[in-house]
Image (cartoon, rainbow, N blue to C red; front, side, top):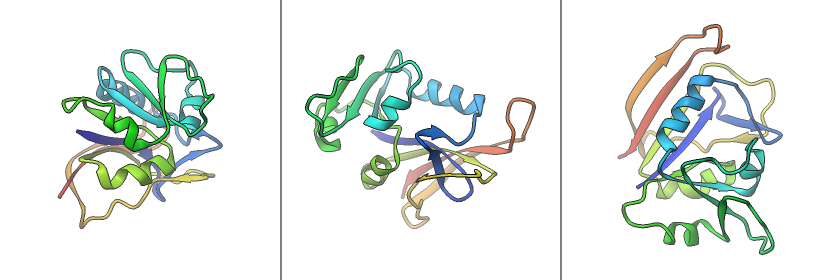
Length: 162
């Protein structure tokens, strides 16, 4: 099973200069709850953006064509195809970014776990691909208002492939 997980702003923005656009503690908690005990696949830049390196209690997989790349705590594969081929049939895989990996993985994914932020980041240089209604059906939506820890409203939205 392949899921894609991301936080996106109103225009589909997901990052700026290899950083998240919004600091939403509940989004980070959801990310941890969903991905812990599973496999996460990410691009090299996403791995480099992790403040403490490989995420604990998950199989960390990094995609890079650089043969000399060392990512402590993670396995490195040259392509999404080879990484997926290394997974067991019962393994739940989460694609965690960045933008080019999301585009590659979208046709293969079974589920989307999105945090849709009801705001527009002042700057974004990485975007999530279009979620086509002909392909994706909304399964659930959990709305959250802005509060002292969350500067803007957001929703946890799960999609399933039609």
